[in-house]
Length: 267
Image (cartoon, rainbow, N blue to C red; front, top):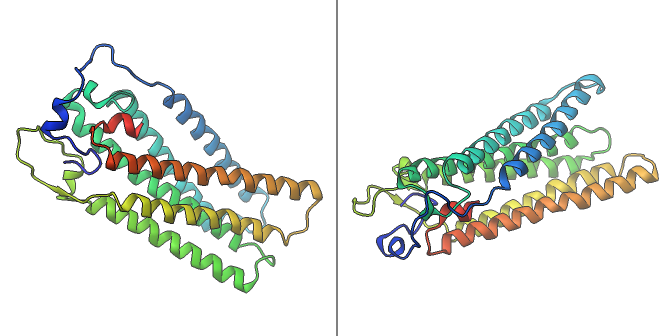
């Protein structure tokens, strides 16, 4: 079965409710949420690029390029997930989606997962590299620690991409969902252990990506109100960690779920 479209065997499918292609039960909040999040992200990224280009004596750096690349992949993530929602049944139960859309839905999910991994990895490295550039607030020890975290982030992201590419043999089996009467032409790994491990590593990288700016900026002179604002920003940034934990929990639920309702559960 396709990489993340699991348990689509005859026993599972025969227990599904009767399909309702005309007026299926659906959830429609995601498009507005996704577009709003993309607009906010775009505003932050381009405000940063404009500020660096016009106000910074150092000008644009590699960290800004990485931030832009991360934004491009976040844009691709939004596009693929919106396509999945609007045209491939991600907002409804899989039994209410035509079988002819299964392969395209699985491909959209596979592409969006890749875009998510790349966007997160480039963004985290960009944040770390930006604060590595600050002089003289970064001590030698802090700089070495930041380089270590950047290396860890890059290796973790590359490993996640390898898992995504090699989770099935051949690769196209990741998005090939055959009719239950057809013989299986591919073999895919079980991600029951992988997703919790990925979530743990991602959570760890999120924590240090938040903590490094806080540690670096505490050595920079600023007013009491500015420092209070920095603390609030750091606290709000922890919401990203909460989102990551929730994502891990839901991905694990998909792996262990036996109803095969991949589209609705991924939504």
